[in-house]
Amino acid sequence: MTHLIRRDPFAEFATFSRALDRTFGFPLARANGEARLTFPVDVSETDDKITIKASLPGVQSEDVDISFDDGVLTIKGEKKHEETEEQPNYYRKEIRYGAFARSLALPTEVKSGEAAAEFAGGVLTISLPKAEQAKRQTIKITPASRN
Image (cartoon, helix red, strand yellow):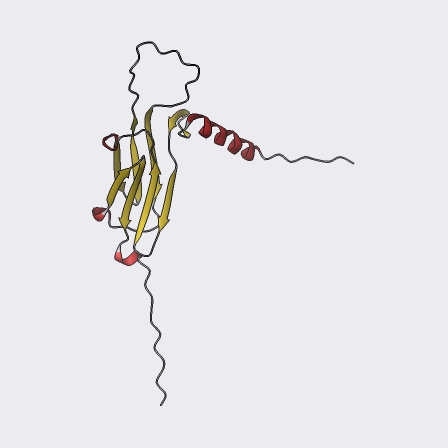
């Protein structure tokens, strides 16, 4: 009796990708065969707003650009390297520097003109109020009158 062992190549790739993320600090994204830095985000929703939190350690707020176009929020910028030593001797060099970008399709319509952004402790927090038609509305049931 022959037994086939099924392997999931995508699971192996995901494991490899997570190992790269841990090694390099910022995950590496591939676009047109070119590796570039990306970053983790949390997207949450309440009845009134969408909140995006992006982890950008080592980045300054003036090096980040946020834009919104046709339901897609884009966060991009640059993690700059400031060299203080002329000839450093590295035993290990894992901190990556360079341009990063991430675009997120939002799950509902928002009032982009009323968006607010804060940057503290390496975390960028963006609050986007929902458009009126996108807010959850409740309909109150009134008891029927008896005649």
